[in-house]
Image (cartoon, rainbow, N blue to C red):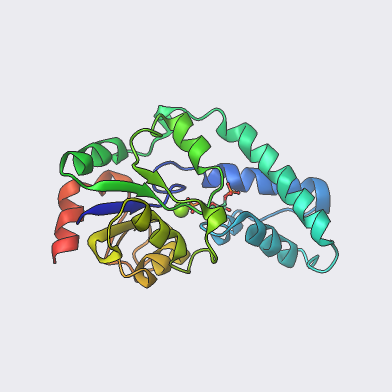
Length: 219
Ligand code: B16
Ligand code: MG
């Protein structure tokens, strides 16, 4: 294992709830639509525009808005979201992650971020982790989002490591598919039935250790 390529939301910090709150506020204000709590999972790992399309589809509103209106709605959601995440601190790093990153680094493993979020650099700065990662892949520069492998491949390339020497880390089904399509070893956090495509699934980030990553990579 020469590099570990991390998803951000749901792996390093739990921003899924802020995405969902921002989308729920927008949906209520703009479409008088109540999003069910179960909708949160549908939005994990997919891009901002894809998330809005999923919501419009749910409300049977898909053809009712022009491209420009869709862009304005996405911007409005992002304003709500950025306001929420501007309050993040290092206390919001998920359990086990700080030690995991320290131990990976101490063992010479390069660290990259492969998030679908355009807000990833801002989030890392708020968490005090901007200097810890060697590279952050830019989702605006890749052709296809998760489940396509592009963002994970960009993360590996940014740290100069071949994909088959990387462990990818995810919490979403689309993300695990992206890791496997990139020919990386996949370690996931969450429901083991949902994420069965991964090489190893643990229930919480507390279970992530350097030893686990190394063992899964070597087996
Ligand atoms: P933004 P990840 C993803 O982050 C989120 O899971 C997803 O819900 C969100 O729509 C996407 O980022 C885009 O985020 O609107 O901030 O660009 O899980 O890939 O780290
Ligand atoms: Mg995620």
